[in-house]
Image (cartoon, rainbow, N blue to C red):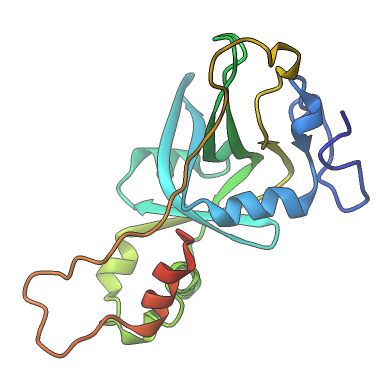
Length: 227
């Protein structure tokens, strides 16, 4: 089977750490493949080693070029400890259960990305506030200007980390079960698609009369995307 994405000059470097060993035909180091998964997934998991012990924390993230940002509480010991630390950030999207003719050959259709780099705290107050503005605008275009302005205390209480992507791997499975040689076995086989989407809104208690759902949010819901 051909590789998902043959090596190109615009790929992330292939190293012993990032090389796909299991089913390498599903792997890619192409920026376009990695970025598409980072941009489609609203949730990431960030792995650190702190005092010799591994930790993985879930958080929302956003990408700008070859940098990934995430945020959290400035009081978080994980975020404070992550400064100048090598980290691994992963995203995954599940697209379907793959039911084969045998238990061994069952699988899932998925898209995943694993990126490596060094975490840096965004220290400058104005830069941090602008990064948070871009975060909100990335998720909900046009919303920032309608919100109550952030207070200086809220900015101070929020930590923002930025990581340049040094190495990255995407891995994708998309297709039916790979057991066509067993097609004569009398059991149903195929794919149960999994779709993530935004559901109808639930207005906050106390919302004044006359405040309608903004058109950009309605359009996002209609798009079928989750970000």
